[in-house]
Length: 177
Image 1 (cartoon, one colour):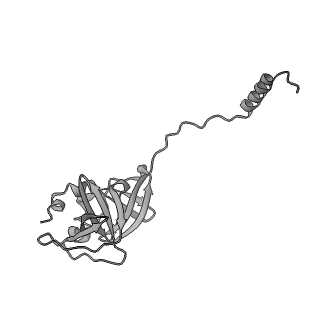
Image 2 (cartoon, rainbow, N blue to C red; image 1 turned 60 degrees about the horizontal axis):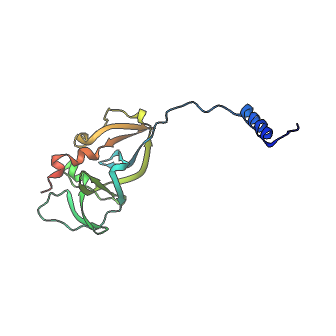
Image 3 (cartoon, rainbow, N blue to C red; image 1 turned 30 degrees about the horizontal axis):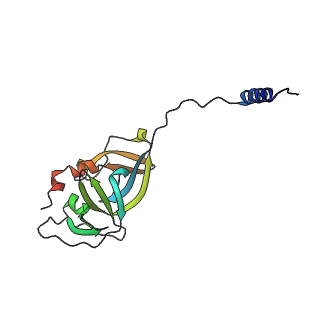
């Protein structure tokens, strides 16, 4: 094919591209995954919104504060800030929480409440499709139920959703003295 001008060459190239072009994909709405941090508390598998957990740490040394409830482990110096460390197993069950080797601190900063929540174990990032959320709460712990807001099933494991919002607005949690 002989072209008389560069413009004709561009037109021919345009026609070839259009013949071989595929249509754009259908406008399918992409649903964002629900993302959280998986952890174990009282033997139960829980997940908290990732946006509610600022940091995950190994349990730091704490200084006991006189006159507070026994589930307040004490204050820890974390990056120059004094943060209360709270034993969540002890808070929920009013029995001695165990401190296994795998225990971790979830640092939360919600509604101007900064605290370190001592949990049995942290499993890291968990992703769930929002459509798989169930409002049923299959928890076996009555003390834990006021802080749950549904669950996700992942294979044989059920992850109850632990609400940091419900925790920091709970009067019992706020009364440390």
